Length: 472
Image (cartoon, one colour):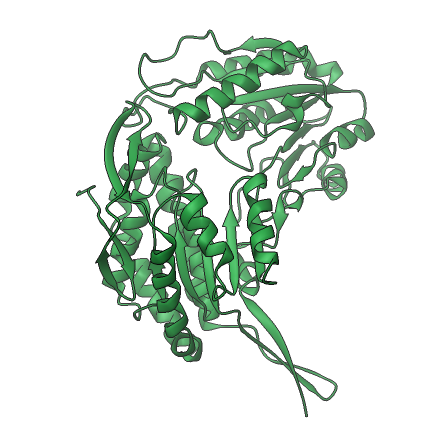
């Protein structure tokens, strides 16, 4: 597998970068540079957008069944690269290979396949009085994606945009760009028409801002931090462009007094530590009834002890490194502040043993966290679980909703109707009841500062359509 890439994908071809500047890609488990990719410029974005703009009329007019066939061919080409994808994610992000195979490679293939069917069956026209209501593709989409799920986050934008009839310019994260090159190898093999999908690598302040501010980009779809989402919104607002934003989270795992505590805590710790805690939907606040609080802490500590740190390619590893040295320092800073604010260290922490090399943080559980403290309010994005007690159901819901975020959450109870009642009261875009599995066809997105719009399934497709009324 060749990791050296010196080109962009523009107008259906691999095109050598002009500037000569590159961005280094580092293996976070060893701290070694393993590859470099071109550092794109605003001029490169201009070329990519021009190609997407020229391709848009033809792709928009392509029959839905034909667009579905293109996506089906892409699914086949990407599936053939599943092993390489998993290994590349393990290399550039540090996700343990077993998890990378199941989640980082497997989930986007499931999502892509779902849009093969949805592309072939677009929303039907409606008749409202004397009006024919039709849905049309938005146009050229600028997709800006993060590093933590480097294929899934791309496919969650690319697949519905293509299914809707839009063309796309993609900027993947500069921290994990190698997976995007595997995707575009598959795109080229699948034979999508020139200009329909284009790739420009580089940094957010240069390439990302050029995409968000470009006058010929009709919509920007971004996943990442709330601060960056705010910046993109400002750039797009200057030209009244549509935005879809999937931003931060601080999700609560609410365990009611009648719940199966052992299962709720075990699953909750697993969710909080998935991808080394670098997951926007992670249940990073564990809310437990005070009558069962001490028992929950013991269970959480035992579960955390089972997360062995190490080489992502070692089958025994359950927790890989964080993506970068800067991310490790941010996470450790959150831990230090949480302890200074009165939190009680149960396990892990800044002094826990970790491998000598790599950007590792030990799995950490902190008890007695004040619901208003920074540790309970800020997105940590590392393997850190904050535990908070409550006295009754109303207090639990109040604590769960005490956040500027509202992306995900969970509730556990032996009484499913009670759990559903509480789930309805939680101000968040998704709630899992009693550990229900993730549904890639359900709408995904947040309330409050967790974003605007929805991804996945039919609702994800509709983000890339606009509505026209024709009176007759």
